Image (tube, rainbow, N blue to C red):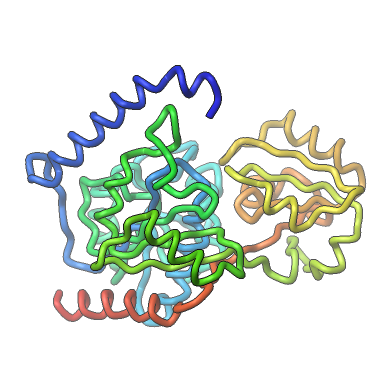
Length: 341
């Protein structure tokens, strides 16, 4: 913890008090939460950024979209628009945000919407000619104006909420007691060989309740990088001289996975809107070498860099164990909710 964060400790206590009062008012009904007559799954975290919400949403899309009409609803962080928008053929990352645009491009059968007001966003989705049967709320754990039917809470292996503190001293948006609202807790970005004893230790540290399920996942990289018109095997590209570019919260694992001693690196803030100056810096740093970025950054860089030079590396959220139990929990919730409508 740096000195400035220590100095801001009194503000963290005040922020914690304010968020606790807010949650209490929702809990007792003074502040109203709205429920809807369809399955709604909220995926979020207690901390700011970097817990792997996007690959977890994609996991749910793959799990459910063959059987149900799915819609994702996101805030559309840093988008250059406002209000409710439903992704269309002419949408782009600037208009709807990089993560929603990624969902839209990868899963053409689903509806992708953005609205900072999740209640209004759901209402607008239900007014569509083709209504969704299931809505996935992206980064909506603190958006208590909507009461989802199922909550998935993510916490990163290297930054557990039980070891963190409130903003601005730490990175928590609300206190660790907020975890009690979760149906499922997933520890993300784990080592793939995390032992059962280590898992048990984390379970104790998180104080997982008896009515909650706990799972552990790791980030699996795909075996190819992808460009506009081609793909290249990762093992082949690791030895090549290249430029690695990332505008995500925690880029170190991405760099470590692909780098060799001859590579250059450029790191930008999370959800960074690349300027003309940034594009020039990337071109100058890459020279004629290949440029590899994250899938999320690719959505913002595509069209600004040469197609033959720009590639991205997809990732997936992979369960260390018991994925079939998680799948069954989600499928049972959606199926039961759908039958009870």
